[in-house]
Image (cartoon, rainbow, N blue to C red; front, side, top):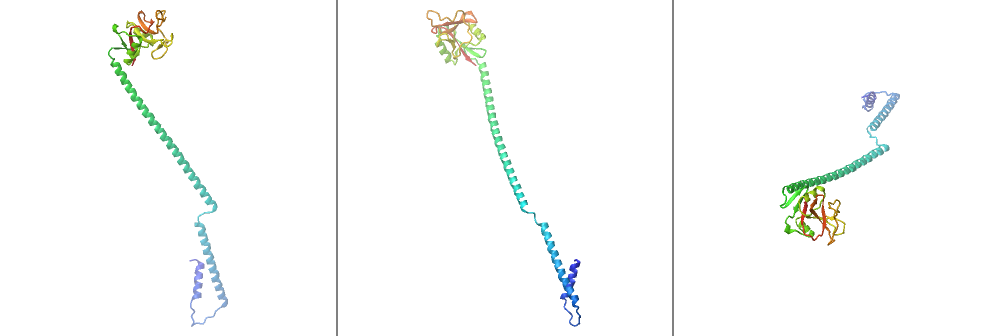
Amino acid sequence: MDRKHSKLLEMSEDIYAEPDMTKKVKFNRGEMKERIVDIYVSADTLRDGETSTKREETADTAPNNGPGDQHSDSNVSKNSSAAIDQLQTSYNTITKERDQLQTSYNNMTNERDQLQTEKVFLKMRLTNLKRTCPEGWQKFESSWYFLSTETKKTKTWKESREDCLERGADLVIINSDKEQTFLFNLNKRLWIGLTDSDIEGTWKWVDGTPLITGYWYYPQPDNAVPTQNEDCVEIRNDQLPLKAWNDLSCDSQLNWICEKAF
């Protein structure tokens, strides 16, 4: 207890103490007034001190929530919310792109697997074809050839082609010197798949492609008499290998050669 409080307590005890009525006391009025004044002054001082202390405590413990601080907190909250929304949008976009890439990857993987399966199938098929040449056919490079050999079964050009088509083939198309030499060495007069029956002088193969390299013997093609209608081509076996073609009437009867690619 500080000095002021101690003094005040003593003065209070003196004031409220019950007087001893058996004694005669001589009061000094001046001294009494001074003591009363001291009591009031001390009480006011104590009250002011407590009030000041409470104000200081309140000032120290109260939060700083002025108008400026509230505005700042609001801006921070808004900025944080906007940043979160932007991050969420970016995340959603990246997730969508990832899913699209995954789908594309899966599709490409499936296509690759399908192509690989087809490749294996075709390879096996080619191997089987190479191993099992059909009866009556012979192989040269990348094709099989069927040669009609019986003299009594000769046919017109049209009939010869129909026979080839029934065998899953067509009259031969010659693409190189090697192939022409191979056919010449079969040593027969043979129909090949070349004609100008659509437009005279415009020679085409049976697949519709135009003639580029010909192996005519001189002076063929001549569309000669007596028919003057020689629209189909044969290989003659009494000429040179690379000069052996002759135009002939399509109604003539010859052997023929069919070709089937692998």
